[in-house]
Length: 120
Image 1 (spheres, rainbow, N blue to C red):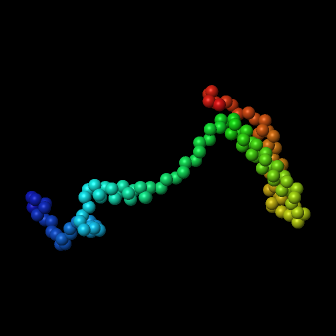
Image 2 (image 1 turned 180 degrees about the vertical axis):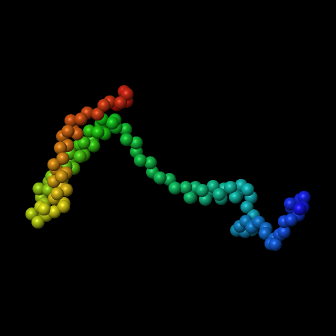
């Protein structure tokens, strides 16, 4: 056994590190030019997503609005069911519309959610 493990290493290929990109201009870029080019690429690559507006309504107000929306939708479905032609009266569409119209949403309208720690 050899005392120095580096003596046992044999190199079969001469692998050098790959070189960087060739300069596009007459001379290589300075560090400041390279940094400016990098920052410009990062700004182009950055995708900004629009933020959704924050809902500032209180929870009881959101509850009342949601129940109002449900009641409005139910009235629209009742009109749709009334205008449904006779040929579709026994169809799956008619059954779904009847199920929606038969829901008793007045119980939801009567519920007043609790107020929350003085923030509502």
